[in-house]
Image (cartoon, rainbow, N blue to C red; front, side):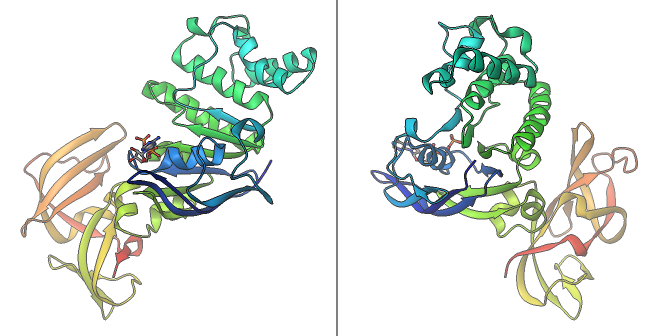
Length: 340
Ligand code: ATP
């Protein structure tokens, strides 16, 4: 296993600055997620770590070794890419034993290792199958087994669950999360799906426009977003302008107990949809829309001054309908200042 360090890594394609001065350390054995919107530079960052792209400036290190100019085949990385197809002229077992064979691992040992991985991924019985006859979820598992078979120092996953149905994603997310935690391989996990990253990664780096906006544990990034972009990208936030003085926060439409927020004359505050209490409080709003999201219900409400808020409701307790008037309170102990 290795620690991976990107130091001031920058990648320019002609006029596009895909990755802009990124410094990031993935600790030995850590699962680091990179999340961000399409085109923000996630894949380019991962490709630099893998060796498929050479940084325009800056460096990549595995432990103390500078690998910036080392080709991918000499880096011992396991790769699972969206577009990284399985070898269709080989069986599943052939796919998984291919890497170790190239590494010179003996036949018996590589077959044993491959079978063990297939069992671990719950596809032990598929060794003799032709990959083309497998379901999408089974193919992803084979891809993962193939990446892990070379006993990589670093595992790089780029949108490994794209194209799978929601239920399978959920199952794989749990299994893959547990597997990664057990294996202790240093892992970089690229996805635009923040829920996947939040549930599977030890830390996540939120990227926007080639820049890393924040790095932290999922709870840290969710609870204390560094800026408006992160507050909006990771989960949903209501971004409200307010001023905080004398232990009170003034949102214009309501004055509330500041709950320990620092004094600020003019701040943007991020209020999560579940930081509202419905049923009592100094805010009056009208319910505009309700979205049933399975276990939760999201409500869009508007205030008299036109401010629109997104709330999360308790499916059982807060039975509301469109057009209802509700009173609300905000739990200021969870509110976070994202701009001052
Ligand atoms: P997605 O989630 O859509 O895969 P991403 O965050 O992974 O996006 P990248 O693929 O890293 O984003 O691309 C970052 C920027 O660099 C984009 O503007 C993209 O068009 C550009 N880019 C990436 N690869 C190349 C290339 N080989 N040549 C030119 N521009 C490129």
